[in-house]
Picture 1 (cartoon, rainbow, N blue to C red):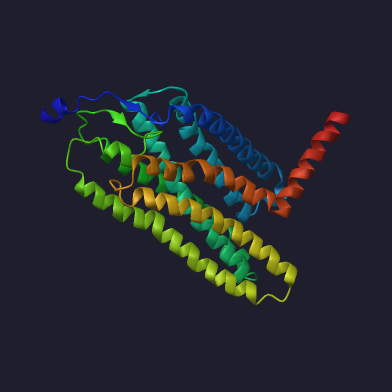
Picture 2 (cartoon, rainbow, N blue to C red; picture 1 turned 45 degrees about the vertical axis):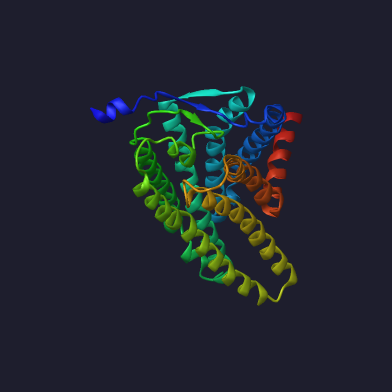
Length: 314
């Protein structure tokens, strides 16, 4: 009964960049373009890989799953963010805030594990090319994909339920662009020390451990690349690994800084910028990195385009 009386907040107000009203209009235009390019880029990857049977191999099927995650991640965050930027203050219901946080954690957690699985796939392909078909067979691939999605669901369920079990008795202004764990947690009218320990431990297991494993796998990959006799082979392998590392460093680095200490001493504006790095830039960069720098993807895209042109001319 006591907790019921305390939990008086039924809605939250997202402040966005209300301290800089002159910037909001410009940011709205920039973010809208980024959102549309993100959706288009990832949708192209999903369609090309789905339709081209020659790309139905683990490397590209992992990429297909990653693009599904990126589209979903953007769809959960960007529309609400655009609304926030188009108004001075945006009201979001308690339930909508819960749902947004849940899906951010679900897709974010899934991406953490998927990127790790993709690094393992590249490690097996480059370091053990002869045994690769046995190491990364269909069964192993399915297990890694299922593990990534189930882990994301578990992380989201535990963390979101825990955060919203705290009483919220006011104020109800979230100084952020969307309902992310750290800014929402700051409004809780209770001792969140145990949750912060969980968040610290969880971030190490979900973010830091996969990131370190990726780095270790790429040290092995780099060693294997240096032993390659072919210069062309070296360049292709370096290109694939460098693009993947660029993406994972941006994603894991900013996510780590955001979630390792939910009540950290960073200013609200710094927290917003860090969140934008992994929620806005990573979904945008992934299709550019993986498709424009990949000859097989470009070949498949051209084949699909030529097929479409032929159908129109017949």
